[in-house]
Length: 206
Image 1 (cartoon, rainbow, N blue to C red):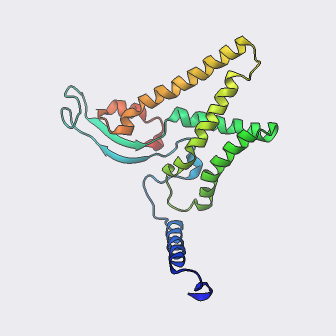
Image 2: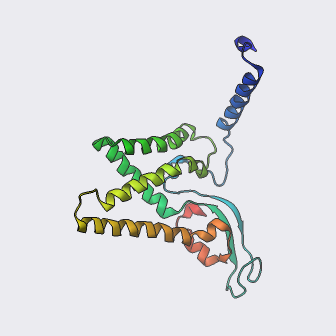
Image 3: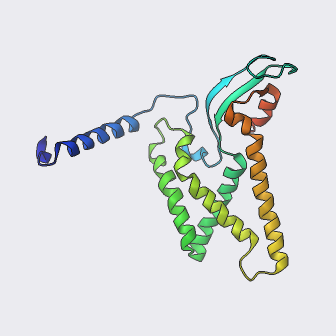
């Protein structure tokens, strides 16, 4: 209605629908056990648990020789080593863009900022760390840029390039190992509860 009646019905209906969706989500502030503030997203401060159960030995995949019960969980936790390394990568890109005027670093920062910064306007809303998935690719690209800098620019000495490649390789292998280590928490694979506890590196992950 109003002064927009000249617009097609479908367009006004679409605008009305999207407006109601926005109003609902902006006003959603009911508490949730796994909600998290965007300040904690980059350091994987509060993941979301989708599923958890504690099968007894010999049941639901829990090995019969397990001393205590097992734990099965599906936890929306990014590979910690990847996320924590990405924090340094973002800082590196800020330096590259701010002091070296590297447009590539600026482009990556724009991708991170577009998916991340708007959430700080809705800190009172019930939000979760999985909303960060939209800027994860840019974090990975920023880390790739940092690894490239560690390897060294073209023209560097052979010793410099070899040392850089070894360091970058260690970082990649560490991230890969970290992913494998947390694999049971991504897939709900039953593991002894003491092994599950060893994977709870932060108190906020429980």
